[in-house]
Structures are given as C-alpha cells and as structure tokens.
Image (cartoon, rainbow, N blue to C red; front, side, top):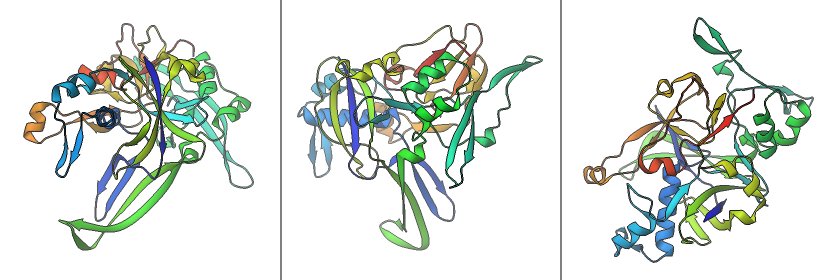
Length: 354
C-alpha cells in the first residue's frame, strides 16, 4: 500500500547540517532531512502509535523488542516498511510537488527597476569531448546559485529536452527558489561548556520555517496500514510537525511525473538526474563520461549493533540531489547496500532527449 505522508511545520525546524568551528560557533540547518533522519523519526513515531515504545525518565524503551523489530525493523531490516522516498516540497492543497532542479541547466537572472531578481532564460550545458576528456561547455562552478525547485510542469518540459522559453519559466519558477519557500531565522547565543557560559565565545544558529502554502511530503510503501495522523518530531531542537497520512492513489499527485516513477530504476538514458542525495564513495566509481556534482557532503549512517556497543557512528559521502550523470555504455547507476536502497537515497530519473 502506497501512501503520501505530509509534514506541516508547527514551529521553526533544524535538520542536522553544516557546522563550522572557528573563533565562534556556526550551525546552519539543511533544507531537508537526510533519509536516515526521516526514517529514524518515523520508526519511533510508528512504534509509539502501536504501543511498542514507552518513554521513561532515563529514555525510551520497548518491552516487546521482537514485535518492534517485525513492525519497523532494525539496522538491517525495515519491518513492514517496504520503501521510503526522500522528502520534497508540496503545495498545501496536494496538487503539485517540487524537487531540486538538475545542475546542468544554465540559468540567467536579471533585476528589474525595483531590483527584484527574475529568471530570464534556462539552457542546457552541452557535453563536449576533446581528446577523450569530457566537460560541460560554458559550465562555471563558481556561478552556483541557491537551489531551485521545479514543479511538475518544469519536469515535463525538462524531460522533453531543448531550451525552455521565458514564458514557460515564469509559470513554474515564480516562487520556487528555496529562498522564497524557506523562511530563515537566525539566533545568537553564548556557547556553553559543561553547562557553564564561556566568556567571549558566541554561536549563531540558522533554522527555517516554510512560507504559507507549502508543506513537506514523502512517499512510503507499507505492508500494512501501521501509521496514523499525529504530531512527529524530526531533527534537532524537537522540531515539531503535524503528520497526515493520505492514500496516494486517491490524489492528483499520483500522476506527478516524478512521483509515479519513484522506486523504479531508469535505463537506456542519455543522462540521469539524481532526485535524491546519492550515497557514493567517489564520482569516479560511476563509470560515466562526466558527472556534474557541484559539491559533496556527509551523512551519519544507521548504527549497527557493533557500532552501538562501541558508541561510534560512521559517515558516508553524499552527492546532492540535482546531480547529473552522463553515462558511458553499460554504466550502472550506484545502488546502496542493504536497507539504504529502500529509504530515499540514489533515486534517479532518466532523460532520453537533450
């Protein structure tokens, strides 16, 4: 059974993200939680709703660990969860969904008389070959801008190939820059060391909320209907969301160009676009002519029993959603091991026209 889960922020949220230690402390939330973070929150939420997890003074425990394992799995299994997509943005009437646009679009911006930024044109970078060295003609990594989120109309146009005209751009880029969807909030405070103030040492924390009309969403496949509406915390600072469960086949979104292709592996494409973050050790492992990934980040892995015993967690390299792979003949898309291939990493769409 396939469901759409929606998450409406009830206050500012902070998803574990960039942290920089210099003279001061700086922490900035990511726009979306990593799939491991989302899965952990959903596991706890489902366990509590089904009476298999209780909160005590010194933490949360289950008196029925085997039942809990069958319901939501453990480090090597997912229980009754079959698939979980990455998180994306929805409009609140559930008629459209927004995903990170591919990085191979060259976007030209201008300012009008009121100094408002407008997107004028979008063209595709072309893959060129000189002495078997491949590159994107005209691509300049220094011109990377804040992410843009494309709706269904954008993806229909993108998959057709060819340049996208100004009139079409206006239809789906009007408010989809993340700076128009994510409301930034900055807080400044004094750093603590063992609950004691440190004189002269401050921190800055940036978290977000969503503009009116937008909410988060993800798609989940379940063996049984084990989840109901309620309040869920995701991320740091007890970030609170109102969760609602919808049967996907009753919604217009079931026909969204990307949503209807989630959990399928494309093939025979001129290029592949990552709809979610990719777990990959190195882009060189992709056996591609060229991989466009402007930056990389890391994510904490799910803990195994031996990791829990040692009190350690590991990190994996993550290539961001929107990255583009230009495959060689026989190129195989990276598939994570174990449950990672079912929880929202390495989801792609294939493009057959350029």
